[in-house]
Length: 156
Image 1: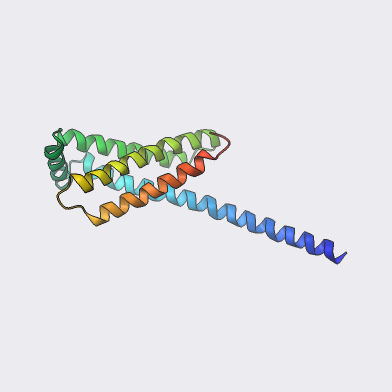
Image 2: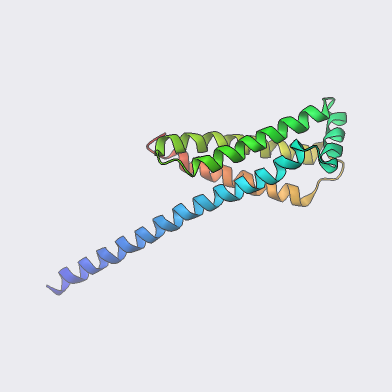
């Protein structure tokens, strides 16, 4: 009889632990999405407002890459804004299938954007900025992690 109670108690403990883990897991994923959203908003707006610092950087990028720096700046700003809006809106969607699809799109765009940022920092900018490299690597890691999780979802 004691063995049955011990087994039931162990089962309940494991069940509660699993529920706590699932809650932590969900909160962590939301936090990652919010961090990615905030960073993308913060980087999109200076580009879309053609702030002098962004305009000067993209003018230099344009000269090195032989493209229109202004177009590259606005294009990058729009892509970053789209990523932020799609990620943020996906957090408010109740249908899991649609939420997963939007997050896949957003994280693929984020990963591609961060790979581009890393390449520009390393090969185009005369002096790569450590903060921007670190941020791009962190966001790339978040994207890869989330894409890995989303690829395992049954509803994609």
